[in-house]
Image (tube, rainbow, N blue to C red; front, side, top):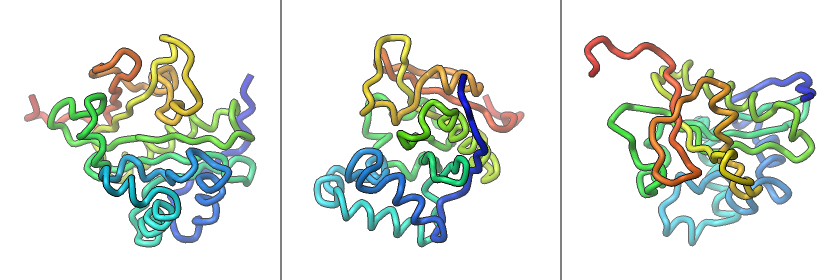
Length: 198
């Protein structure tokens, strides 16, 4: 049984930069990524990886762009997610897995990271819920994710940052496309469709 503990989600801002560093820095997530992968051109990925990515993410945070959310558990930074309007993640359009399903404006949840000490405690679920709530507060009508289908085999640790299908399905997301066997596109509507929409 999961022990959730007390969790609080906050938008990543200048005052919370130390918590972002604690999660995504030297001992965190994918070394050198700093959750910039989906925002970068191929050239930027080649030239900015590592310290350049750290500076780029800090610039977004300091500039008030709110590039992600931090979930604290029992007072400690426990997890990070990257959620924003899809247009902020240029890589999504370049990938055959995550290319647009249609022309519906969506927000995208592209990354989930839970600190090893807090895995198995419900933090990933809290990250998804926080991302949904944040997108809704910002006026989003739809949120989209690109998880891995764990029913089709083991999910390597290096691929778990996409999230798992079961997690998103439990939060109400529904599959709307699947271009490769293990990676569906899943969506959750956050407000009713416009009456004039087809």
